[in-house]
Length: 91
Image (cartoon, rainbow, N blue to C red; front, side, top):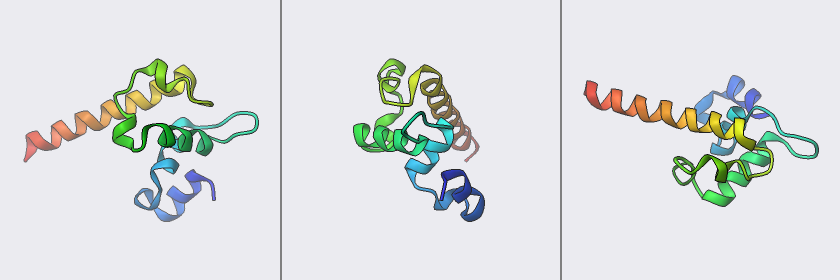
């Protein structure tokens, strides 16, 4: 099942880290999928925490990521950081 379909049918909480990253990446390329790229990111960095806040050019070296997708991941990370600060401020 494709990552987006998994999210729609089962909910985001049932998606793996790789599936969520693949959704953010959007698509793959010739011979590989966004899920392949997401798995390559997790293979290199180990966890979502290990991936986040890495230099954009380093993330863009992963097959299928490139600059635009690295920027998209950095933006998602920043949204999460801001959300965490907001929640901490409100509690």
